[in-house]
Every structure is written in C-alpha cells, then in structure tokens.
Length: 438
Image 1 (cartoon, one colour):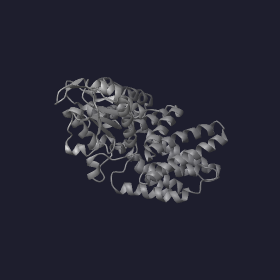
Image 2 (cartoon, rainbow, N blue to C red):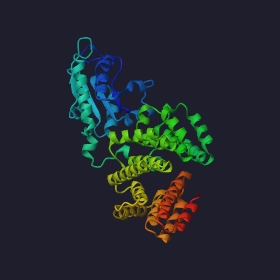
Image 3 (tube, rainbow, N blue to C red):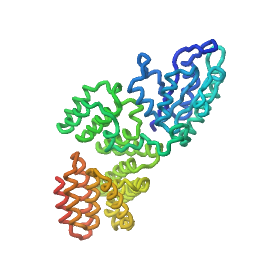
Image 4 (cartoon, rainbow, N blue to C red):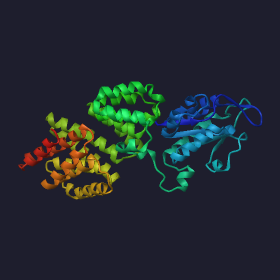
C-alpha cells in the first residue's frame, strides 16, 4: 500500500542558537524526526531538498501543500519554516505536528497555542532522547490522521475549502494554468496523442512544472484516449503530486481502461481505505467491477458475473449515498439494477432521487455532457422516448471528448440487451445508441 507523505519543515545543517552553541538539524532529522514519521507509517519528504538558492519556488509550494501531513521544527524561529507553516495552516485543517528545542526557542504567542512539543538537546546540539521524541511524533501524526484540527483558519472560518475535493472536470477552471501551455494543450487535444506527447517533451523535466500544468497534461492524455501515456506520466510525477486524490483516481481510471483491472482495483480500494468513500472514487471503482462483470458474462461465468454485478451496484450506490448531489454513481447504480435478472426493485425508489440531483445541477447553470447523458439514461429507464430524444440532442451538443459518448452508448446497449432478453421492444433504444455514433 502506498504510504502517505509527510513534509518536514526545518532548517538544515548546523545553525547557531541565540544563547550560544549550535543545533545539528541534520542529526535531529536523521535520529528523531524521520524515525517518528516511519513509525506512523508515512514517508518523509524534507523541505530543504526543495530549496534553490534560499528561494521558495513554485514546485516547493506545491509539495508543501499537497503532502497530506507535515512535521515542523520551530527551533531558532527560522523565517522560512514559519512562512511554510503559515502556508500549511492556510490549506490543511489538521495535519502538522510542531516541535521545538526546549529552552532554546521562544515561540510566538499564536504558535504557542497550537501545542508544540518540546524536546531537549545535548551539549553537542543533538536530541537528548530521540527515541522518546520519535514515539511522540508518531503518536501526534496518528492524531492528525483522526482529523484533529490545528489550523487557526479552519477553527475561525467555517466552511473553509478543502483542496482535495476538487472534481476532475473542473480542475482546469480552479487553478491558474500557464496560459500558453494551456492553449497549446487545448489545440493538441484536437490534434491527437502525438501532439500531446510533443508538449510533454517541451515541458521536461516535469518536476519543475506547476502541478496545474502537469494535471492538465494528464487530462489531455485522457481526452485523446491515451491511457498508457496517463499511467506513464503518473510514474514521472513527484511523489507529492502522484499521491493526491485526483491523480490516484485518474490512475485507477487509466489502469482499468488498459485492462489492468486488478491494479486499478488496488489503487482505488487503497484510496477509499485511506480517505473514505466518495462519489468520484466509488464511481471509478464501480466501473472496474462493471467491466469485470461484463468480461465474466462474456466468458460464460454465470455465477461469478452475478456476484460482480452485485458488487458493482453496491459500490456505485455507496458513492451516491456519500454525496446525493453527484448523480454519476447514482445513474450507474440504477442502470445496473435494471440489468439484473430479475431487476433490482430498489431502482424505482432511487431513480427519482438521481433525477432530482441532476435537475438541480442543470438548474444551477452550465450543465456538462454527463448531466445530459444522465437525463438520457433516466429517460430510457423510465421508457420516456420523447424525453430521451430531447436529452440526446443536448448531450450531443455538449460532447467534449469521444470516450464520453462511447460510455453512454455502451450503457444503452446493455439496457437494450437486458430488455430484449425479457421480450421488451428495444428498437428505439438501439436508435439512440446509433445516434451516439456506435
């Protein structure tokens, strides 16, 4: 299982103390902080490795923000450390453990309120009891995992935004992209995979690029159906960026599209185990089980196929129950319920909830392809030919990427096949599928 990253904010080398003597921060990191992080089951990432000439640059900020946890040593009241701590507290609600050398540092009033842990130094400027402090660091990181809030902003400002909840489809709209690169990628998505690869070559090395640019590159590969390139790109990302929720979700998506379903399942189940269920992650995992079900059905594995279908339904439904506003896992759940033999009776109760969710989203303005595709599938499930025709026209007009229509056409084909087995008329459903280009 991929271990969470823990960013270490501290000076490096030997630093003088105001009262005389020096502190060996490299030894403190090696003997005390790194072991404590390891005991908590995390991977340390030290901040000083990201500094260039004393300047805190953009990739440094991204690692600082994207790492799930952090340990900050406030000894010597280093200006960079306090600045980095302020950035952490602005965007992370409860994920930073504070330390300082007892008797050597007078903490500012507002920081002192955050329960920084004191440790003793020897005459040589190293930790006097590194094992004890390491154990305390591990304990406090475990508390951070349980969601304890240590950020003044989160404590004082209700509803402060969580950067991990940004959706894939609005990521480009929520971050500042380098304008020229964004325009080139937009053009490349229309030209094909080779054009996107050419831009990736120009962006090398990716570690020096803003996270937003790398993410736009990843989603551009998705747009041109280059799932293998998506997997390769994730392997080239910095560990901090590669471990974000969005990237791990897209990695699971790409692995599944490449037929590497066991790997996709592992990536997504680990993410749910660490972060809890969500409409997006559960929706992607539900798609993995849905593809496994279809493969088992095609292979004639009747009983295994039935179990996988029920597993896919439960996974989609769990995602929808996590966030009723997101119709994506909901429509997939009711569609698969229709495909069971006999159909799952729960679908009649869930379908109106899914319809309300998508209608409210459309009413807020600027609906996307998936909103109209959801209306299309809902109309088909309700045997509403007129409503399906109207939703189809809106979906075709809102199409952004080819694979979107392929997904909808596939669902309509599955619904038509299930109804044909029951003796129902499906000609109009087949016509809808053909209109989507398949």
